[in-house]
Amino acid sequence: MTISVQNKQYLNFINGKGVPSSSQEMMESLNPANKKEAVGYVQKSTLEDLNIAVKAAKQAKKNGSDCQAQLADSTFTKLRILWKID
Image 1 (cartoon, rainbow, N blue to C red):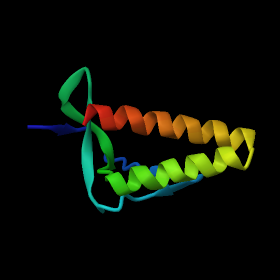
Image 2: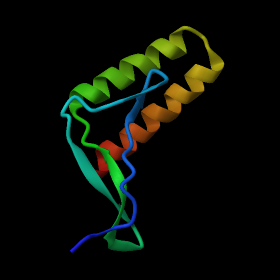
Image 3: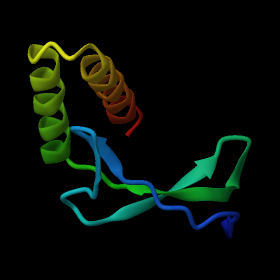
C-alpha cells in the first residue's frame, strides 16, 4: 500500500511554461527513502514530449538568450536523466 503524503501535481516545464504530457497521464513520484510514500504526481511523458522539449531547448539556445538557454539546457539534462531511469 502506498501512503500519499502530498497530492501535489507537477507539469512538464517546456519553453518556459508548465505543460501537461501529451499522454494526459500522471504517475506517482515516490520518496526514495521510503518507496511506500508518494510525494507527488508527475507527468507520464512520451517521446513526443521529449522531442518538443528538445526542440524548444535548441531554439532557446539558438536565440542566444543566456538565461533561457541555461534553463533549456537544464531541462534537457533532466529529461535525459528521466528517460534513462524509465
